[in-house]
Image (cartoon, rainbow, N blue to C red):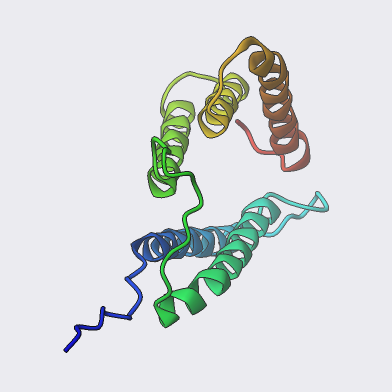
Length: 168
């Protein structure tokens, strides 16, 4: 009599965690759509300030739907989760996503609740996020990341103040 090993594939906790993060992203996209729809339509400018939150909400919902379409079939079939990162990775993908989310909340809090202006705060946020996600901080990285971060922050400031007429 031989004991046959259990042939059922193991559960996929990584995929379930990714699906939970995707659901949170969809809820945030839906909240942006609801908040954007409550902004009155533009009278004097062609685009108006409600276009940006509506576009971000629609983009977030679309990305969440695409990610869910990739994750759901494997989760429902019970296939083992594929690993996105090497085995020697210091932080798993879920921890990196949570840390990036925490860094974003910190940036919003600093810009909204302190006298730190939007452009320098956004440049610092972009620099920190690039260093965190790319996992480097050498001279070559800084030579590229500092101008990219400053340009991105300057471009966002111009977009919000000149196109959407928002006071930052």
